[in-house]
Image (cartoon, rainbow, N blue to C red; front, side, top):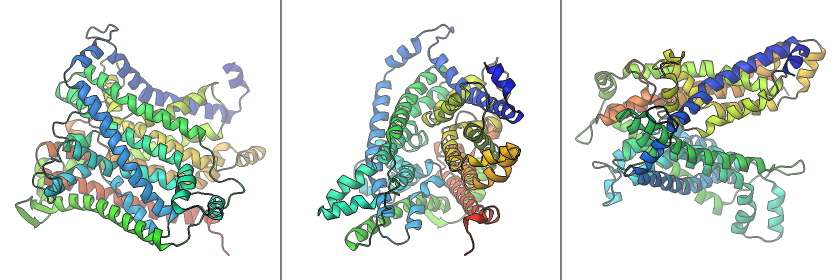
Length: 561
């Protein structure tokens, strides 16, 4: 059957099918096989025979049940705090008439510019043993569940905000007019119109925050003290004890709740219906100071808190010796980082991030294009690639890292030379953040009518010429956004790379973890600040590039009047 399809296909379809096969093979090698190796190692004993010995040993280990319970309940608490905070913030931006809405949105997303460790370091400086506001916590220590929850809420807030801003962006004004005609109170309109319209966004945000909190490694490692959670247990088993079998078991346990959250979100998205029909009237909020003023105050307080966390990290990087010598200077940048030998780590991260964007962006976009806009290839290939593209969203970075160790470090693997190189970290970043970029590319491609390809075919124009002259220019905003997303996340990620580096390939985000373990809080804050400045500059360059390239290549978006 495949031979018949291949024989009857055009040259373009054959090339498209071959390229899609290569993309599927790459996803299998760098995603499916490492995860399969992880699963296989968890169900084998030391002699290589199939056995559940590792699971039995894990269950019998003192404190493992406590680590599982701590992981789940902390994730639940973080979700219960973060989602309402983010929902009210998004509601103020989208459904109220407050000034400077763009500024508030940028400030709400500011935590994305740095590693999750930024929040942990800042909360130590605010509420730690020698913190500025340590009296606020009374006898409660920030080193433990309190600090983990606080830092996790800060780090996961922008992820929930992005989803909820989109969920609240559209609404049918006719529903609000009907509620007004029935003399419904403001609170009743909120409960019967606003919340039901945003329920799918709320569920998605809750699942994302829960999965993020379960798999987060850097925060509990820095501010968790001796409080046991699964993510740290994976690190201890692999790095501290070199027990890869036990690490594989813990990684699978870490993967389970993240996959459950992913499938719940997937099921919810399938049931979601359009919030705006063809007859709908877009809702435009009307000024009302009784609503707008309290929401403006709330948004300002949340934004101030976000800036306070980020600002404390910057301040710590400039203080000579906290808290005894508060003179400001750049010693931690010029001497602290050099003495710690981690300035090369910053350059490594730059290289990794640039390579991730340069190679990951075309691979992801072209694969999405082949799925959406071309024909050809073996039967069943396209659904398989779609499934592979969706899988990384449910795989925590730590789990992917363990899988890479077990797969690429195996002596019989011909790809073993990739281990401990920049290349494997670039590949890990592309795979780890594949799903979000893939969905971005698909969204842009689906907005282009298939009539373009049909007209090109009728004019005997190659589909690759159509791709270069039509599809790529139209999708340029999505391509630039994918590149920015990959660069920023490659600069800030910790969990995906913490198992893959060698001394000469140490990335900046992991160096923060090492500096904190050594008690070098000033240089750690300096490195975190460098990362934030770099990602902020990259975001600014992205905005400028988007503006100028769209003016040059998409003049049709701004027709002359």
